[in-house]
Structures are given as C-alpha cells and as structure tokens.
Length: 47
Image (cartoon, rainbow, N blue to C red; front, side):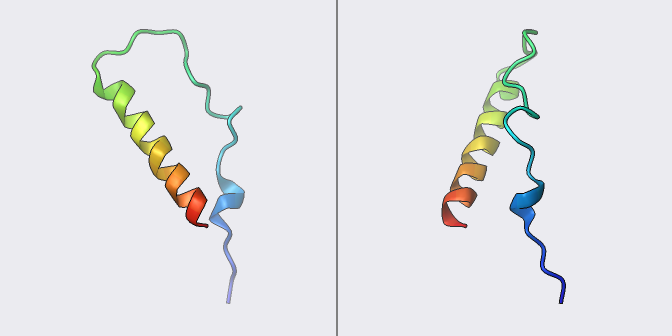
C-alpha cells in the first residue's frame, strides 16, 4: 500500500502571497480565500 502525506505537498506561506496590490472585482474575491484559509486551518488542527 502506498502512503500519501497530503500535508507534505501543501504550498508554503511564501508560495501564496497575501496580496498583489490590485483591487478586487467583487467582495467574494475577498471572502473565498479567507474561507479556504479557515477550512485548511481546521484540517491542520485535526491532523
């Protein structure tokens, strides 16, 4: 059986810049990354 560690392949904070200094088109462009960050934080705290 092959063991797969998904956490090993997650990008680092440096790979995902916080901002590129361009305005967003709509509010969802701000909310969705924050939601994804919260989901990942929950997954990381359980693992």
